[in-house]
Length: 423
Image 1 (tube, helix red, strand yellow):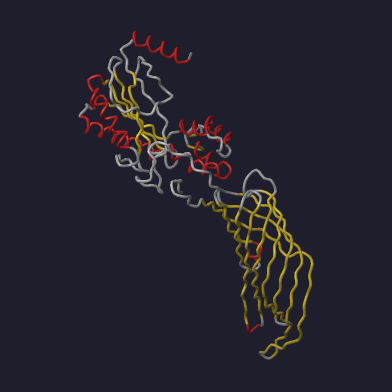
Image 2: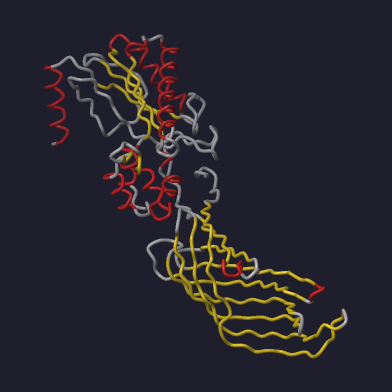
């Protein structure tokens, strides 16, 4: 029924106008961030040669050729617009050079960033993380948000990058954006009475079914994957580009305990977020101060690994956790009188809370308690020497750590296998 209605409209429009109808549509591709057309890339040569052959055979009936170029939304909008302009120009020049057709009948339409195509891909891809939230942003947030004075205060891209600390955006960058990059749709519009035969069929489209219109009928084809830093022309598929599986970013944070720093105990902690629930951390504390003439020693070195379980939270790196830690170290402590030199080990439970204060910065507060065993030698300074007194051991149960840390979060997406996007 739908096709019958379409054909009826087509006949009616043909009888009432002498408009254009799209006779062919092809897609060619560019290398990432490049505007120069390379026929040797992927299936470009076969596609463009078939199109040029059709132009040559039907040039008498051609009314217009429309070239549309796209760029993915990553990067600066101005640069993407300029990139699509140059791609339109280069495809136009290539068609003129190889067919001799007049430039006057070629219309260039640089589309810039392919937001509409991205919205369609997100809607059609069920694996997109936070898909509903992404669609809400795409549907309700303008590309640029201005205040009363005309100053830009927000943007669609900024909201996408901020959503869930950028995890959905990085997923789209790796899996959807390559399908939006570097694609050019070329549409040949001919008079309804003109036909061209013996030309290889091009990929059908869903947006137009050869329906004449009273105005210029421009076919917008879906843009598809073209090229990545990890691919070459020899390995690039010709037309079909499967979506790469989601590779979760690796979340890493480096922290320092401000309380220990204030106590002249420099420290550094590295934490690796394995998934939403588990992380592992390694903390090191080293103070190696001494002043022999006044018999002051403040020497301490401790290494403490920890595994943490994060309670359910709305965002990564945000919320409460409970941890199991262990550690060991050595020390030499003296304050003019008795000195204590020894080593020890500890284990216990920790509890803390972490909250972001910026795009990469976070604060963390926590405490830890458990068991510690230490064995040490007690000595006394006398006449420039240190007199050994006794050896003791200590079993201790109670608080073992307190922290108020500031941390810097890193999000690293490792390289994926060949033919997958690389960041």
